[in-house]
Image 1: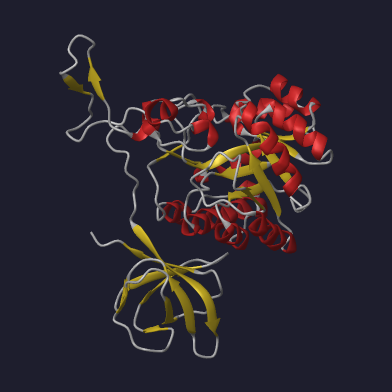
Image 2: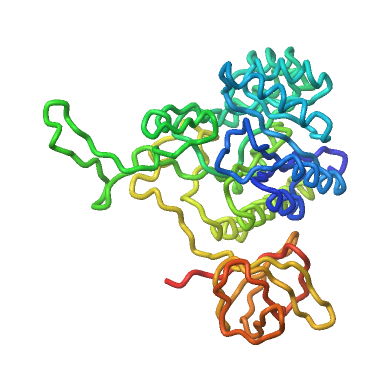
Length: 412
């Protein structure tokens, strides 16, 4: 199996810190937005200078970088897009994720050799459409999330061999068809198709009859209300063999607006699972600790979406739109002194002397230790660390490296 090309693990990079985290924890490639024309306006996104630094960081480690440019532009956007493309054409970006035909045409005019990936926003659901886009110079198609595994296999069999396919494997699902949603625009004038979605599909709703405007009828599953358009999160960690056997080239994690802790955890889990599969496909077995790890980041209940059939009522959560948050991300290792066993840590949430904390890093299992040694950066003893991004000194039970993560279970 060593000669078989592994599927690419593609991770979100909402900002420069997350880009580096994704690379460190095992992503083969990252995707990020610039300061404009990306469908995640709420993410930190990267400035031109940060792109230069991030691309170098990735390339130095043999990884690739994809720039999202997948808004649906209007006439007034076109000149700005053209200027933007000229500003990034020499940065060494490995691929551009685009949904609009006009933008694709412009990209090919400005960068004839650019690798173009068709965004999921383009709603690609059949092999003939994939063939059409291949003839327009597209190198990879990101398949719509409404496809089943069987449809993805058929797609792979029917499309040109040089056309790569990509599919989402983990993250938030949209109630609307692959993100084409008008609710946010209509209700709060925030355009979902330009990266400003307010997620009104997660809100509570009541029914009002036209002739009785003062009478509200609750639509509920329990006394707290309902969330009739609140999808569970996609998770395919339990189905790695089935995913790989579809022939996809790239497995994509959603989450450019999630934390570095989320990126580290999810990328780390899928890296281990994918590597384990390729070691011995015939004897591959799911490890329950992988699923347990995924549940330690903020998440909704999990679903396999449309992959095994059309999504049914089990794919929705009708009782709450809240995330499950059982762990806090409390710190990130900046450096480590091997002689003293003391790590310099940047605090992310409050820690108190005596806390049980879990520590994990790239390609490592976590361990638990009691927080028994806590000092500020000047060496003064502390009882607690309540200040955001406070620099701390913490004694570690095991060696750590830069970018290791610290978490602790929430108090109930």
